[in-house]
Image 1 (cartoon, one colour):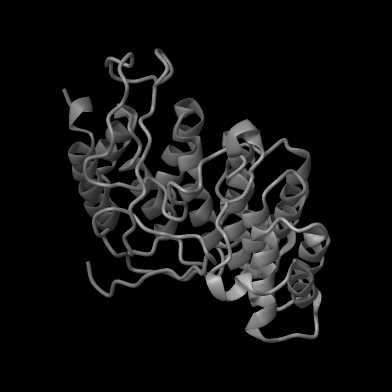
Image 2 (cartoon, helix red, strand yellow):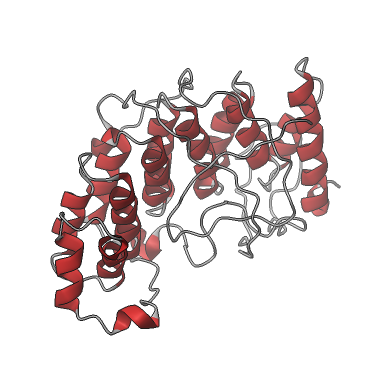
Length: 328
């Protein structure tokens, strides 16, 4: 492939990466894309039209590596149509890719135990520990402060789960705030966790003018488990910005234990016209520990689109390498 470029996403304080180096992709225009036709979300936070404002793209698939083990996945017998195979055994870990979802490491488990995300439990770095809670709250709430101090403080009050942090996040997440402030407010919400953070994340997904923030919000909501992830993904797939759609596809890893829900999404997006969309779908198919993923990839190896054909071959081979136990 020629003239390869990477998409760009600043996903503050959330580590991206996946095993072996991925195929770099040529990037078409990211300003707008036809929304993927999917079933509408039903959650109360997911109602209303998706914003139509598209701006600088988020990096949906950086190539930096990180170590983040995939937990073994138990498939339910009879849950996947297609070729017959034994679903009674635990599916193997990926042999070639130690991170199924670029963006969230093993320190970011799905669902937060009882379905309410409790934050990363990361402490402040040493230089910030000397700042009192009151000082940190004051800096985070100071809308006149255009320095990095306020941005750092927004994350710290989330890490510390301070009383009054949610009100400050609500104000900092408003579209009138600078992009960097909104990004750090969302990062602080991820650190803070809890039920009160979720509606703010939804408001950012639904109404932030930045595709970068809307894409990041999908990841944040997905932390609350497969049901929340599914609704955020469906909403993201209806977004006008192709980069947000791409982030929604990557978020399907949160639904990996629900193959009957995740494969219709991946199969539909794998047949999309926008390269960024189908490339992300093929990437995820290459990491899904189910033979159905293999079958979809194999079917695309005969695509008339030469680029899609070559990518399908690439990820088909990767799937075979990652899951040799499922190839018998």
